[in-house]
Image (cartoon, rainbow over all chains, first blue to last red; front, side, top):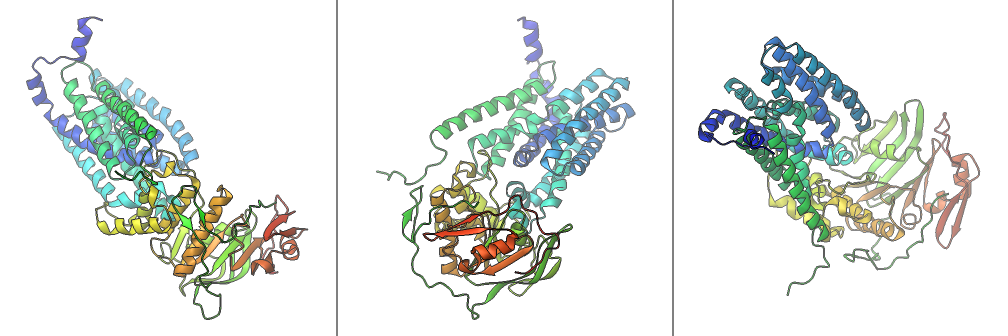
Length: 292
Length: 301
């Protein structure tokens, strides 16, 4: 392996100056990490990992269309996401129908995106960035968009947190206790769409799962506490995305390989810890040994 | 043919987890006398799903502390009856009153134990979290702390003998343990009526008896009326005050001895059904399967 490749992957000449240039991106990334970490706990509870992928591809198509038309890329991405969320909501109320609906939707979205990108005559980096993530694309007005949408997502999550948890984990009793189980489903899909659309701006459409699924998947390996899971999940997501940016600014390649690698390493570590914990018995159960 | 399990005589026994000793004591059984308040009343009630009449002309009064077993073949409308009481399915005719009022969703008067679903091992939910969902899971806003719910949850888990595994993820608990936690969850509002949908499903006879005993103790101690849907006759019939047997749009209400006879069940099923009683156990043989409901329905037997 030549030194040239390593220079592309890790290069910390003038690191301080480069860092100053991406300060906005880091703020945006941290906010997205919080959103991704929280939303991923519900993605896991509701078994929606595949839906995330489907929404991401249509969101990509929306962003590509926006790029081609010369309008706000975040807005295009949001439009694609919301459309995908609505279609998934309408076509797939039941889990089984949902997966096939998403499987049908996903390649169509990706195909549309490729069409729009092929027609686009601008900078190649813009095209590639939509799929694999980028830092440079996050300029100040876009950062404001990302943070604004993220705040909306966080507010909605805060309001529906408990009923959504109830409806996701225990739908029969939730319905009996008066939780609007059916109405919460499209609400969550919509919020998920918003979260995915914003996350795509940094990690790209192909790798959204690293921020919207992996963090909670890792957290549930080490704990079952409904307080600790979102907390750990947020920490994992923020570490992945901010850490990814901090390493990526030195090299010449997109940010997503760094983000996904950190997320994956965290997941592996959590699996290992979880395996040890499971072997020792998850929680102590009496008849417990009386402490001497 | 209905599965038969050995009947446990009233005596003390220890759960498989070794955590709880259940003893059926000779507390006075609340007589279903006219003096006991009625908590649930169905009058000339009919329920349709599409074209099909599940049951009609149903009259049933459930009194405080009463244990009514709801029996019948699949598709006879047992679960739908529970959904009607929960306010999730409107009656197509007749009236249903809970404590004198029409049913509504989320009523604190009703505790509900749904049919068991498989719980994946990594579902982020411990035993105490499931009970917690029953306490404030329906409220809007973020989950904020508070010692109050925690103490209440500990009390409930202790009452059902599940405190030993309060912090164990639900997916790692056995079927019997999960049912105890479900009962604790259903009791959070101190309901007047407990609706149980097949709570004995896929439990071994020992755990079936433990669950039934737990519910029996609860209704004796707190006067909670129990509407208990089941296919398992023998753990339930010894302590059921009455039986509601649904079949083919027809029904029969009465004490176990009145309903569980060859004559009554043959009439309900519209075919020859043999009820064999041996040593206090019931065996139902020859119930027609698959079962074709009578489209006219509603014949009162």
